[in-house]
Length: 297
Image 1 (cartoon, rainbow, N blue to C red):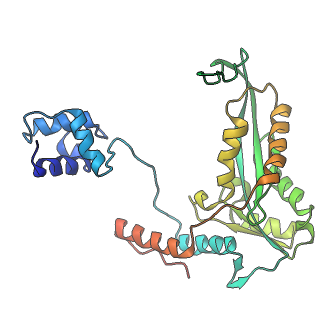
Image 2 (cartoon, helix red, strand yellow; image 1 turned 120 degrees about the vertical axis):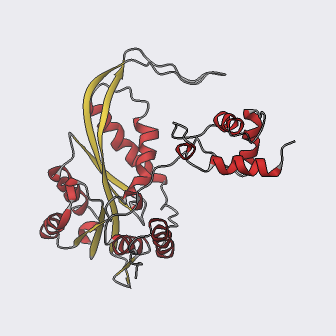
Image 3 (cartoon, helix red, strand yellow; image 1 turned 45 degrees about the vertical axis):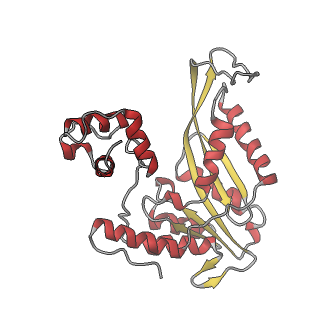
């Protein structure tokens, strides 16, 4: 048996960077913690599995990590709040009319066209499907999409690359189709990628389509873009594993899946609201100790 103080000390150690104890590592493992506890004289000996049980009791996983980024957009809360309002069918404090639509848009670039050197094998009892490791490259394509947030409708096109011209083609494709062609207003939510960045992109869309409004997300906030929820579905069901020999075949598969997706799709159960945004901003302020991020009005 180990004293409670020893267990608590090892758990505290697991929550500290190894460098704080002059250990030349970036993360701890259970075995590392067991060895360090012995080196520091906390115990004469302790097994890796024992340390693992101690950590499991408090769900401490020092070998795991997640990447994140502090918002650096000075208008982060205001921009994010506008987008969250649109998801709730609100713009400038007023509810949207029935003939106003909200689209979330982005691109999946550099989709590789790969053909396997040997045919794959389908799944069988007791055996997963097999995919040949070696492949031949046949270039890349880009999939550009607009997702109607409230109708759960995905519209897209496949282009050789991304850019202003391909994005303009997507906008034209959508805005000439119903119900958007007859809409009172169509709000396009986009990140700050080069295809649709800055005031110039807002002016360009307004000039071509007076009823379209381009709404930019804050910098580094693509996680607020609902189409980014649809993209992993496409990646998992259409792209991986890839065994396609030409761009036309991949484009046909993407567009066919898009039609299939639209037959059963339902709006995402989006739960990140203005209240949660303001709570996030408060927590970020507390962690970085700098100037406060203004709360979303």
